Amino acid sequence: MDFRKYLCGATIDYPYGMKQTITLYLFRCLLFVLFLQQAPAVCVPQTIFPVSPVSEISPYLQNPILTKASRITTTTNTSVEALLPDATSWIQSIQEQYPVTLPTQPMESLYKFTAVYDWVSQKHYQRGVMRYEGQRELADLLYYMTQSSWWHESMERLTGNPEYSYSESRFLRTIIASHTSAHFYQIPYPVFFCLLFQESKFNFKIVSATGALGIGQLTGIGIKQIEIIRQDSENERLLQAAAMHLRNIYRDVWFQQILNMMGLNFEAPKLGYFPPTIQKPYLNYADLSAEIMRKYGLSYPELLEDPDLVRKSLERISRGDILPAKYAFLHQTFNDLLENRYNQQYGNVINIETNILISAMLLRYYLNYEWRVQNENVMPQPGVQAILAIAAYNQGQTSVIRLLSRLKREFPDMDLNQATLQEISPNLTFKRMRSALDGPYSQAQELYRHVWAIKRCAHDLVKIGVTP
Image (cartoon, rainbow, N blue to C red; front, top):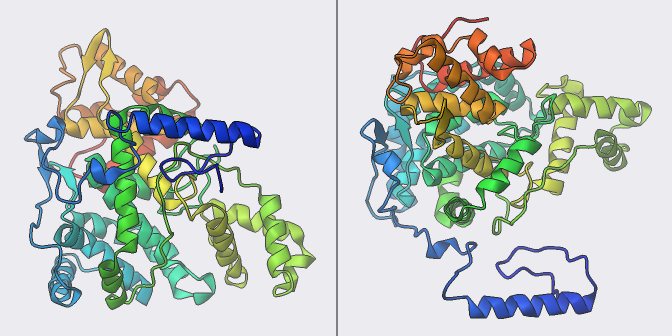
């Protein structure tokens, strides 16, 4: 018997001997029996977040300025054959409204899936997403993505050459996980989608110069903040419910049939429960390159001739670079290596679903954050709060509080609780952001461009401040 099995399905490693391990296991079983009725485990989300549509939403979402995506309440037993014609019509209507260029077959398939997934999720799972008033509709959001240089250059290059072995599955997992996170955490999908797009271009293995990792570019400080947020039972409840919903989608035969009929190759990880701890691995490129040479050196002799080539190539891939075609195979080998090591289960930041779920949790925390400015509590309007939440996600709440304090001093008549995005946006200049950040010029410049790039993606109806 393996006595390391956690009561709710996760595993932990006890640093004790067998006797101590058995004693601790029996003690936990006794506690579980004694308090079962009073304190059900949070890792059984079916009992706390039913599959049917949520009847109660947070008071914050009942604000009239918010608009929820319409829910389709038809039966969830609709056959794939009956649903597909409607789904095809939906995609065609989007393409007619927003014509796009799809030069490769994978790009066309991924575009169609992204266009129709919210519709399918509402139809089959009765779960949609919401947005703030004035933010982009989903079709407009998709159009923004397809007009980017990343789509026309990077995606076309990666999907157009089979040597790069681009993974459709990882892109699909990103879309599904981001949609699920936005639904369960009740955060505006355009903001979250654009945050992930700006942070990583949906690249699960990207590493920044400061060590931020994965699709949501999580740092060690950010993970510590998330661990504190998880101590709140409601936040943990939402995390476990979203994690369980993702697991159920991946196991849903009906959903697999939809993907097959769309011509998509989808290999889903066999996810379990979300564990109590989160791991942020250190990518040792020397170790990773040595393993690649051991596995593939005989197939690619040029690797053995220049061991440093592999290490430097892996570092470039982690920065988001695309290697020349002659070294395209390193993309696949690196992806497969990370997939096998880190990307199969919840709890590791490199795992796509883990990174997206906890990134959404952190964003939700800042979207609901009440700022303390000059001894007063400030809760800005949703559009303004979204901008501040993005800044806090990137640099922490202290810089945002400094920025609001400066605005309060310079504009004493401005009501920060009532000011709209149109009113406050021209005052969010680079100079004020740099002063609030109290850091080097390059750091302030990166923050400013980051915030407004996400704003342009999610809500491009407001003139931004002065560029540096």
